[in-house]
Amino acid sequence: MNNNDIERYTQEVIEDLKEKIEDITVNASSQDEQIIDRLNEVKDKAVKILNNAIKAIDNGIKNIADSEELEKGLSTAKERSLQLYEETIRKLNEIKDSEALKKGFEEIKQSSIQVKENIDEFMNSEEVKQTIEKAKTGTIDVAEKALDTLKSWLSPEGEDK
Image 1 (cartoon, one colour):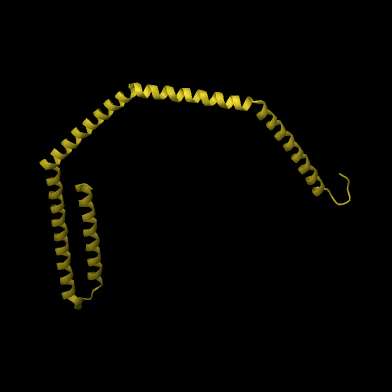
Image 2 (image 1 turned 30 degrees about the vertical axis):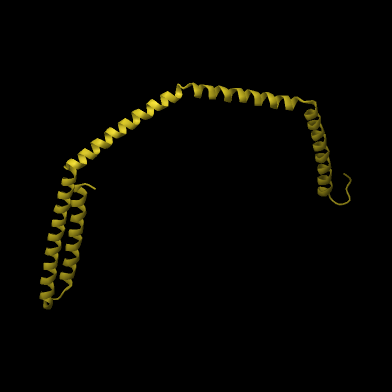
């Protein structure tokens, strides 16, 4: 929140307070002069308090913004972030170029090739081919029986299939 926002919000509060006091003042009868005077005092004090609060907040923000400690902290954080970034890049480059990583990727590649060969060998074995053929034949038989049952169930009573 910047100073303009604070001033705008404060002005809105002041204007709202003034309007409410004026409404009360207008609605009060002439016999209530003491009430009107008291409300005007309250209004003046509220405006003064809000203006003092704005000044205090503004000074606090300026003090923080001008603080050498803040500047030093930000500078230290920036330097440390840059060091961490550079160290991370250096480590990643070391890992990327490491023989262990290259060897690991080669082992993964060889394992993948071996797994594929094993799967191909398994799928091409005579036993698996026969099992697949039996499963196909069994599936066709089940589907035909299910179709016959469905036709029988959907056919009107007394009609041939």
